[in-house]
Image 1 (cartoon, rainbow, N blue to C red):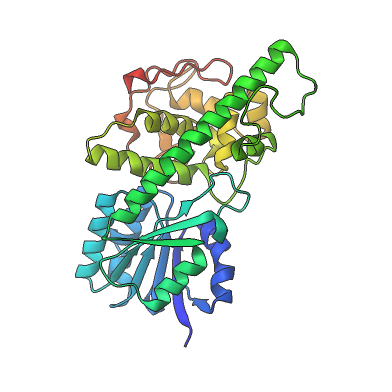
Image 2 (image 1 turned 120 degrees about the vertical axis):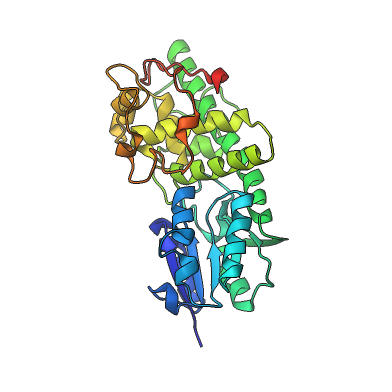
Length: 335
């Protein structure tokens, strides 16, 4: 008998994995009540919480005994809470946060690019193991609830740091080339030793769109930052990267691929060609002609501008003056 699964969450993820699930004999149904396994993947903490614990959430809708497999990024503490609530409601919770090996892979949700840390209080059923093996190129069972999210956190942080450092290497190289003269406008970086880096290639090829988005990366970093707060650890590099991603989201790039962060370092014309609007930043951050009390929800359908689910109100943006790609002034010292 075929295993029936339902899915709720980001369309781009299921669009990538549904064909290979079908090939493996898993049949998708629309109603979670009739599913043996319910899969979820949300790109913000608030959406994840609402999906499970809100009015009509999955813990109240799913059939008793159903297996809930969540691929979203969240904190270890919330993962443990979700597991506890599911258990009380006679459900089996499996924590399997999507962990990409490369942030800029052309096919980000391909099996080869996905690592699957998995945690659960219950022994994994054979059907669940088979399903996870179809989704992920490598599955790593790490034990109790919360531990899979911690592994994803520690995996994401160096990837995000590498993303920003490679993009900044390109920005510096471009600026230097303008000063000393380049051989031609389309050449690979003249001076950067990272010219073969996947991020550099993605930027040079202007791969601004993809299934894995800046919003998803921002959600991962937000979860990591909240986990660090729970553990009383300060991560200033993560804060800085999040500010850059938030800026990209505000000017219209939340659904773009992480490589599009390079557009924050480029001129206004380059951003406009990619569909970005720098006047949104001026308004949102209280710059020229803006309003310090701008409602960020105008820029996104979620509760905040970037959809990451964290509280922007905790940050002091007074140091962000005169926004624009040619004259923005970042000062992270106050954050």
